[in-house]
Amino acid sequence: MSQVSTLIDVDKPLFDLSTFAGRFQYFAWMTDPRTVILSSDRLLEAKTMIERYRKGDQSPQVKPEEVHYNMKLYNSAFHPDSGELQNFCGRMSFQVPGGMLITGGMLAFYRTVPAVVLWQFINQSFNAVVNYTNRNANSPTSVTQLGVAYVSATTSALIAAIGCKNYWSKKASPLFQRFVPFTAVAAANFVNIPFMRQNEILNGIEVKNEDGVIVGQSRLAAIKGIGEVVISRIAMAAPGMLILPLIMERLEKVPAYRRIKWINAPFQTLMVGCFLCFMVPTACALFPQQCSLDTSTMRTFEPELYEEIEKKTGGNVPKRVYFNKGL
Image (tube, rainbow, N blue to C red; front, top):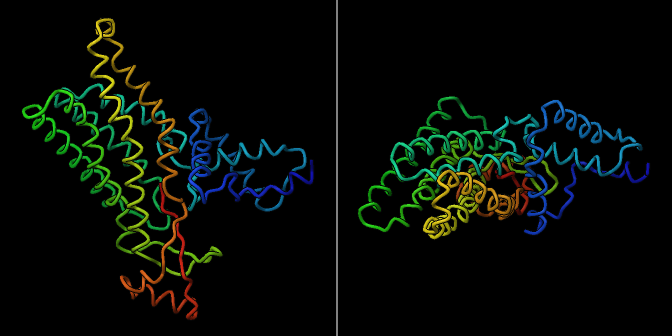
């Protein structure tokens, strides 16, 4: 038992992150909603164990399963770059329960403008917290920038939602009006995430060689990472917000269902949760967490940053550089 325990590398993923299947397993493991109710003290206890194991202080009495569970808690609740404990809404374990409550509300209450405004406001507030806590921690964002990102995303979501609602109420069938929430969510993601992480686009993010040594900065890396996050976020929401309206359009015509008037919002919330249990790890697994960028592309589009890498590496510029894209 002692030999097995001392061989545990807490920084080595338990799954093969170079494949989609491995990444799916990893994110399904990390976004387990059952861990969302754990206290901050329990999470800090997990961090303490991980830090102790990193230093080589590995107790032979601790079973590997317990170490792996603490790795799960650490990865789901602490920022991968800064190591800070994320706020409740920003933790990976809260993505399914938080997303199902908000998305269920948006899908159930879409018929009036005040309801659309309220739920888009709630959704963008939640997204702002998630985007901020899952940013690249090496690119600090000011309070002003946070405010601009939040207002811009909320405004774009409301314009998309109210505009589509008013247009489709006159030009399209009631079924199409059910897709108003998804239109708003997609539009807001294209605004919220780039604005929330604008410092990365303006100044670049740290890039590393294959040995993990920082060799410079890159704006292209930031743009690539943010673009992949936007695609992942929209893919995460799409099945529940596109398929569920089709189901509800038929279900609401069934007399037995229509007689139970209170069931609409709880039922849609539960169904969204079922979609998200599968789609959160699926969407997060679409792209590798540690992205790479060809330095020849940097030489073409950001030559000044490429020159800095040349100076820092003494002319031995790696063929590819690597960076954390965020979530």
